[in-house]
Each structure stands twice: as C-alpha cells, then as structure tokens.
Image (cartoon, rainbow, N blue to C red):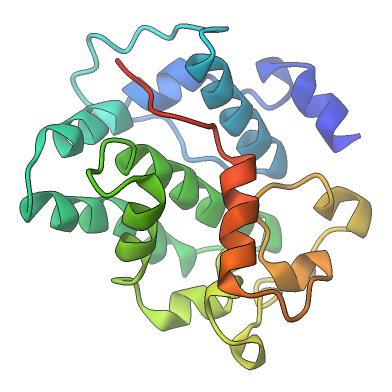
Length: 203
C-alpha cells in the first residue's frame, strides 16, 4: 500500500521536488511517503523523466549543494560536514519513529547529493563525512544504526517501528529493523547504493 501511494505521485504526500530543492523556506521531509517520493523524484531527474528548473535558485538546498560542488579541498570536506550536521542537530527534536526516520533518510539523501562531485567518488565521500558525526547519533538512528556495533543499536528509541509490511518498502533502514541481525556495514552500504538515485546529477 505504501509503495502504491508513493507511485501515485507527488499529490499523495504534498511533496514538491522543485520547491524542496530551490526554496529555503520549504519544509523538511516529514513522512515515510515523503522519503520514497523524494528518492523517486531524484531518480526521475537522473533519467530525465522530469526536469526541475533549478537554474535560478538563489537560496535553498540546491544553492548550498552548488557551493559545495564548486569548492576545493580541504574546504569542501568541512562544507559537507557542516551542511549535513543540521540534520544531526534536528534529530534530537524528533517525537516519533517516523519523524526520526524521515530526518535521517533526508540527511542520507542530501549527503549523497553533496558527494556527487567528490573526486574520491560518492561512496567514499559519504563514508568519510559520516565519520565526522557523533557516535551517539548513529546508535538510535533507524537509518544509520548499522554503522555501530549491534550491542549499541537502539533504533526504536523514538518509538515503535512500523509493521514489517511497511518496513519492507522503506529504503535505507538499518539492518536491525529489517531482520538482518549480524549484517555488517558493507552490506548496509550495498543496500543504500541499490536504493539511491544512481548517478551524478547536472544542473
């Protein structure tokens, strides 16, 4: 049901991909459906199914991403860290499992965009950026808990996870939540790579 709703289009979640990228006042992703729809939207951008007009973005996430793509080492690494750390700060404000999942999945999606132009490649860039984040953030994250030892994981700290049927449809969930106990970081990263929009996006 969740996927069917997402595939029905932006109207299901009220999500406007172009406004989200270009308007600094646009709200964050807030729900399971928002995460699915945004990821699918970016895949559509990649394959030219949709072509959002971001050429005149004076503010917003796309502008910040452009500034990152134009920066050089070593400043660019610090810029990526500062860019995504706002989601780490927001994570303490979450009041439910769904809100925390949406926050952390949004951070992952934005980090993927920020790393698209990295000389080291997107995957290496994402890993290196996440290594600068506090360990406590990962332990109770429904997205990133695979990055800490199993004994430290508490992904349901913000409330109960959704039913298994829904979890099967959600991208980026940490291994504990998909019944993959013992799964290492590499397996989780492979799952992320399969779920993300696939390649470099050009303005």
